[in-house]
Length: 155
Length: 406
Image 1 (cartoon, rainbow over the protein chains, first blue to last red):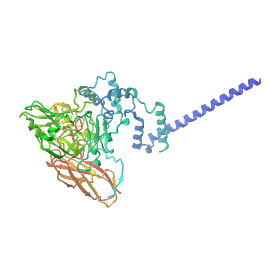
Image 2: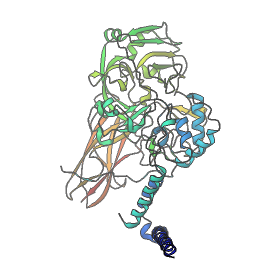
Image 3: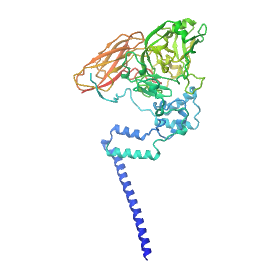
Image 4: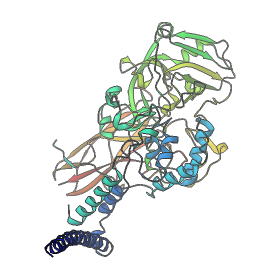
């Protein structure tokens, strides 16, 4: 009788502990969901959050850079590194912006004149990676001046 | 940082943590590939460059200046842009360096040691403007392929050497000579010894000019290795790619030289203007010769704030390829009105010219100073991008700096 009571109390305590853990986890999830949901709504509806600089910041955060190669981390990165960086640096790629057609013609030019090999089944993967992550941006006939640092000039 | 940004950032940080922020592709990294972050030695030390120079590419090495770094009247090596198509020669044996002159249009094949060149021919010194044909490429729309030069791929150093003309006369060239092609000791990126990274040149008429040199010194010293030590062809006012570095052979051709980077869209632009983004057939492309009229405000650095009522002194350089700069103007009202700058004569033909002005601002606010040069034929710099071309050459749109009067 005494033993049965002890076992019951042990089980109850264990159940109680599990319940606490579950509740805490649920609470954390709820808070996280609240923030994420609110954030999404805010950026959609609230004009306060349509600040383009913020969008750009987030964009850069989302496009995470592979710290070793300097390429954007995205599907096709591995194939691109293997085939594109034995002869020239990643910088020659990452500073350029081209359409899929443009990247393809660059590959063909390198194959014709620069000893680039046949890319085989990696070609569509590399092309997709380049055209997606290094696509041209419309910038008009002359862009605004960008000032990196304003300074007081004493003469 | 507001709360939402904080949440967003931490969430992202956590995610990067989970996937492993630094996905290191160590196993797939090609042998000999040096990522920028691991470079050793440091390129600024390696090439003796100022740390404010901007690296565009580390294989091959390409580096440019910024406008305010080019303030000197004679460009010091530390501010001179680097443009390489291949790898820098690894073993330069000066004692045994030989320049061979050959080709269809020489009367005889002749070779010279560096000592022969230095002792046989008269030395000449000129200050010569060298600008990369692709300087300003980054502004073209649709974007043009290649190193994305902004405005810093130009220099005007003092070069000393012998006249190419004197050497060619000593060799003896036939009447059917059309073009001079250079060959050099640099290494193709693929390391295939059969391939040359670049082999361009100039028409015979440019080769015969007084100022076209086979140079062995820059600013009174041996030419730095990265700029062509021990021998460089210098053809001022033309795309700097015609000024071949590490020269060991010159071919006098009876046709337009056909070395690598002479054909296709390399250093060539549509013979007739085309719409932005147009496809241009090889046969409709023409080789760039003289560079166009251009100028640069080198002082002050863009972003200066001055007090209301104070005057601002500006200065810079202007150059016009084969021609001379005849007029220099500035505008502080986006091109609505222009005022004349003081413009100096060039120290010699094909050297850039210095300008200066003293500017009054009518009231507080944001201003842009635009600079516009006009050459001896009356051609001025455009305010917007000039004609689009497939490789983004010859952008001579006016230079602009931003100023605030406070």
